[in-house]
Image (spheres, rainbow, N blue to C red):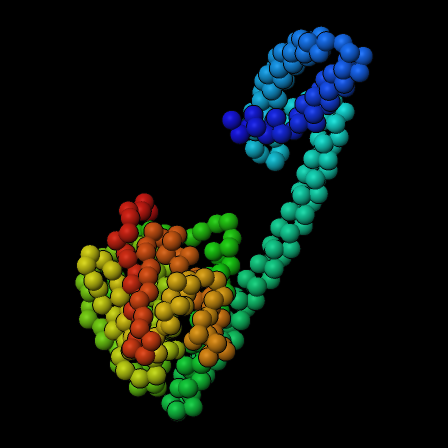
Length: 325
């Protein structure tokens, strides 16, 4: 019905022209004192013929509309042009296709060059970071421990860059297997041990003794980002890591919390919220990457928070079954 109404709307000039002709004939017959019935009868016959033609033309238009609707792909072959106007439109479409292909090729080339550059940079910078860590580990001073903490933070930022590049690329390196959850968590805690000690924060953790179906490396990245945020926004108190039924990993802190108006948007790319406006160094990309990784792994991730009391991040590791490799 909508298509028919659109068709009639496009033909309104033709209907007005026909009505104008009828009125001209009627006016001429009235001037010459001729019976108006002589005009009305031919007008009705012409209207009937016009109505038949309208339905035939509408059927042709509908058929062509359905045929064109089937060409959803931008690179599909268009039907043969019916007239000069059709040919002109198809030539415009052909030119737009060529411009689109050229722009897409150029954008892909620039994107690939940028990805290659930052991937190389991220890998190359790991060498001086490792050398600095070796030198600092040989010095048992407060300054060396502080520098080691800062160096660990730099390593996490580099890892975030690599993770972002991997997620934006076409390929993935997910290896889904059954893993011991404690075996994934302990190395993460070890990397943050110095920061816990320096900031006098308590880690409340009880071994979970459970196995989960996931990718060890990518889940460790998610936990690391969540724990990093907990440390960043917890000036004092405790960070707890526990397991809720059936298999939900919880990271709970006693930090500054998140404003209620920020909670719905914490997983958006580059969104920092009120805490990010206070801490100018916040990038707003950590939780975005966590959400992307969890979606790819089939895990759920959610956040609850009360300003001034703390934040709880839940990672649902029992979301759905994944193919084991």
